[in-house]
Amino acid sequence: MRGPTDPWAILASMPKLEPVEITAGKLHLRPWIPADIDEIHAACQDPDIQRWTRMPTPYMQVDATSYVTEFAPRQWEQGHGAPFAVLDATSGSVLASVALMRVTDDGLAAVGYWCAPGARGQGVVTQAVGVVGRWAFHTLGIERLEWTSGVGNWASRRVAEKNGFTIEGTLRRGLVLHGTRLDCWIGSLLSDD
Ligand SMILES: CC(C)(COP(=O)(O)OP(=O)(O)OC[C@H]1O[C@@H](n2cnc3c(N)ncnc32)[C@H](O)[C@@H]1OP(=O)(O)O)[C@@H](O)C(=O)NCCC(=O)NCCS
Image (cartoon, rainbow, N blue to C red):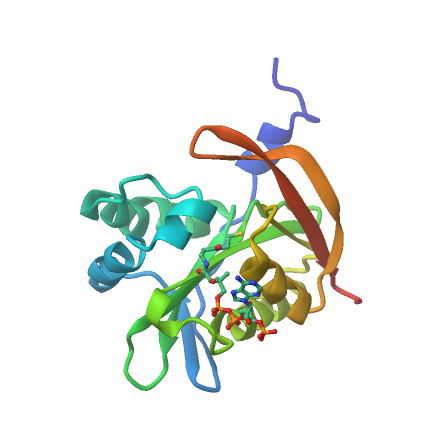
């Protein structure tokens, strides 16, 4: 039976997150819109995104559509997450995705990301994670921002490290990717780090 200490009861009572847009240097972050669907679909054909994230494989147009029109808006609405499109502020093209996930009302959240293959290695996701982290700490009152990735995903780990995350260790079989339980790294950034 679900009582007051039931974690699902806590999740169900999360306040809505007010969607925001943030411009930071050459990047513009905003909630996803239907015009982004083709670009998400194209980016998510990338083998590294397929390998290291929990995206459906194969990744179809319908997956991008349901993400943009159903899952992402519901995250904001239910207060469980803040999925941001990361755009080139000048051209408006989609460069990356940075999402706040698993937000709780006692100050925890996780961050997840991918970058379109053509935009990699230019610091896009490192900068965007910094922006979303600061917003989470200052506006939402998050105290611990958590990062996890499959062991061996060095590019993801570098993004976390460059943002000041402390790598806390390895969770044995802590992550399921495409039906297989894998070891994963875990790290965190605290609001007062
Ligand atoms: C991880 C990812 C989001 C990084 O995006 P990005 O915008 O290219 O990241 P940045 O340019 O900000 O930084 C990448 C860093 O990783 C480093 N890097 C990239 N590939 C690497 C590799 N194979 N081994 C070690 N470091 C690597 C880069 O050199 C850079 O570090 P540096 O600035 O110290 O040189 C992108 O590679 C990606 O989309 N990967 C597939 C999806 C994924 O893994 N998502 C994370 C799931 S936990």
